[in-house]
Image 1: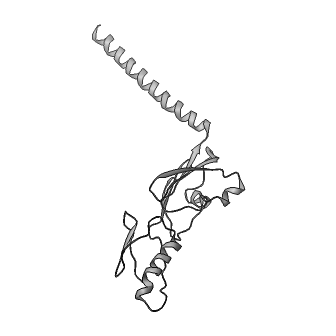
Image 2 (image 1 turned 45 degrees about the vertical axis):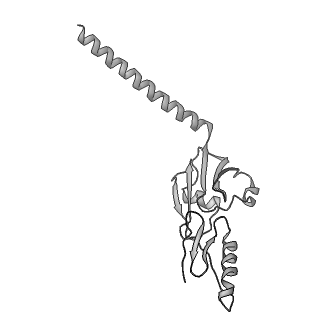
Image 3 (image 1 turned 180 degrees about the horizontal axis):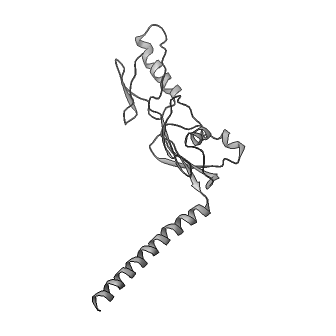
Length: 174
């Protein structure tokens, strides 16, 4: 069994056939393209299997263990990805999960999924693809608390600096 890597331009360099563009094709389409190009050189119909060797997805936002995950079986759905990340935290919005996916032209598209609706499993975005990013949006209370925490520490820091400066001035001018 031979393995060929797809380069950054979506091409593979295949002996005898030369360079084939497989970027943007499904696995089935890539297999068919290779078979079609090999037929003139082989008497019997060749058997071609296309596999992803470094299939990765990322799960970010309000999940227990955010990160990038390597998928070994080449097929993972949204719920399985969330399970790999330790599920959503209590602050995650189940009706506002974002899926960031790169299209065939390299442009990033953002899709919103509602896990409260059963039709989500019928969505074309339910099954994840190579390099997909799942982002679980925080609820308003979490976002508000995060803002308060940041501004509170800013005020404490500013107050601390002012008190230190006042103390220094009092000591100098005594």
